[in-house]
Length: 301
Image 1: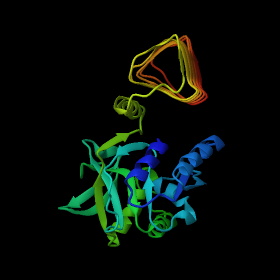
Image 2: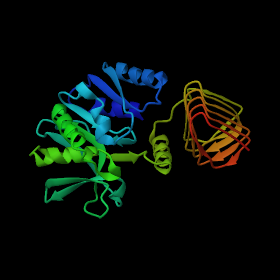
Image 3: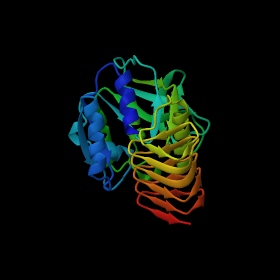
Image 4: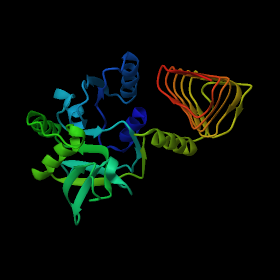
């Protein structure tokens, strides 16, 4: 997901990306850092890392970037995928917020308008005050100014939804300090914040990706397109697909896997899975039906 985000911005921004700053949870290991570094290096950018512990909200997460919050930059949440048109105009705004109209904005921050002018940003509103959802992508001309507003929230214990420090509240302070806010739209917005959303997004990407030769090995197995088979994956016996992603190094043996995701280094043996997510390094053996299991987990039928 992060790689797609970086690829998208590299294609549409008027200026090149020079640095990626990744805010990680305390459980992310060196393998994740190495992968993120490789993504940046492919775009001639440096990679920097910070750890958020404990997790006190989205504004607190951004504050963990510390001194890297200087100059212009993009702030983006990594639980969403999107497509947008190139040739963005970033020169006439202090903040550009990407938005998408949704039927139920209660899971998101929203932009409240008075005519064409944005007058307020509200995180996860309890009442229907706007259907213009903030999708977690912002261009900021002066990141140090944003850092100052986040510091105000934290120094004065100004918390929002969930008693956490909310990035929406920091941006709302910028808005009330006469920062010039504009919005931009995306051609597609693919939410990945829930299991159902992640599954739907994966299916969309597989359906709309160009057909590709499997990067892994398929031995005596039936493949129902569209599927994605990552490098080092091995599928032996059984059936895979449709709308199934088998990620790098995963092993599927004598099994049927449909409409699901088998994450990197996971294994599925003698099983029949549908609409399932199998986490990184997880193992499923002799199970039939639907299952969603996390990384390094094991399930036996």
